[in-house]
Length: 407
Image (tube, rainbow, N blue to C red; front, side, top):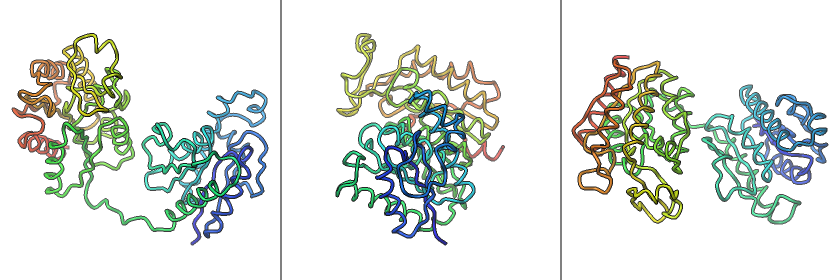
């Protein structure tokens, strides 16, 4: 059966370029559904299946209104919303098996917004001038392939033609291969990890594999935490072993690896078993030392250069009180079984005995705050070990398996 690709873009400003991309897709034997997200009349020669007017209407406005107002920001929001609506609709109907977009800042934003609504594993390719640099807002937590345009998307030349042709080949190659067999025979348990908790998570994963579970590890660097939350929300995970909640320290203190204010909420809403550890809450992440906010540098805080690009700051007493309240309040919202596991001999490698961040008195304040604000029926297991010790990994896994059995 012939596969179908959704091709989306601003056919008013990039009509000639999309003409070429359209032909390259057809040349590879796929069908194409073209969706126009430009505000003005298209200058392309191929048939448009989803018009700009339809996209605007789905986004909550009329095309005439957008043209009359000439408010680019408003138009972008409308077309982003409408494009996402149609991409999701066509995917759910089985009408498309892949999506490709192309553009500069505006076109990339609309295409990426549409792609972010599509499930993991669904082929997504975007040719963009923004493929280098900070692409977090475009990729989000989805498996979007950003294809560098190399030259600006302005006309067809030997370089732009090569890039468009290769990108067309990439998305066609992605849709022609059958997906891997369903891997759901082993229940998935997601685990959060960081460099300073890696030994712990590796041990936990090995223990779970022996129990015939499939551990899915996420790097707690902001995007990793958000990805884990989305995977849980979409129903992919049987339980969550949240060993590394460090992203909350960054959210609280303005570090660079925050996962946002909704971290720790997905498991609570999904009612899946959830074990929470304060892994790496002893640290906040910044870039090089020069990027650390002056208020922290002038306050005599404890810093550690993890590498030339990463400076870690030890969390203090007040911050640990705040973090304890946050973790307790998130756990209190859980509709399923939830428990805490606390390492009494350090929250990270750097918080071990004699290490630069070792401050177990401050940790105890964190633990006491969790106990004070958590619902009385939430189990709290204290383990006389560092988070990376064998004992802690064993106790954390056993606690998770226990609340899974009791569920």
